[in-house]
Length: 109
Image (cartoon, rainbow, N blue to C red; front, side, top):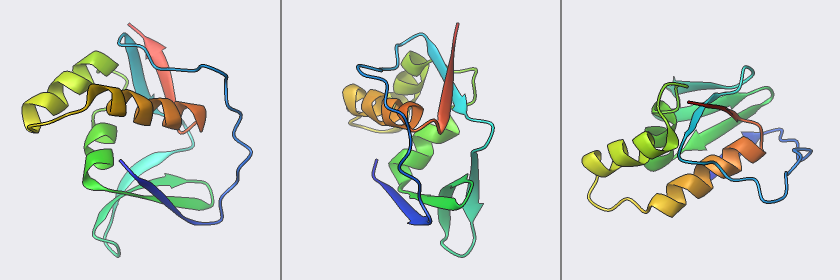
């Protein structure tokens, strides 16, 4: 679930101490962020103003499920049906990092 940013990045994201996603949260891309397929890179990328974040396959699979309808628990369950070994805590940590960076927003059920 490595995030590899390319281009100009800003490190001014505010980190909320102890911020974590809960199982009932429904993550979705922030208004200024978009998940897209890059033909040049032949992979999914996260587009953020002045930044392109290259996603590995795992990160892309998680973000494809972040549509504001699926809860975090449903995302973990769905990934578990697709893949053999899904470390639940790593998925939650990945989502928490994206929320902290304000690339994802969460709503509750």
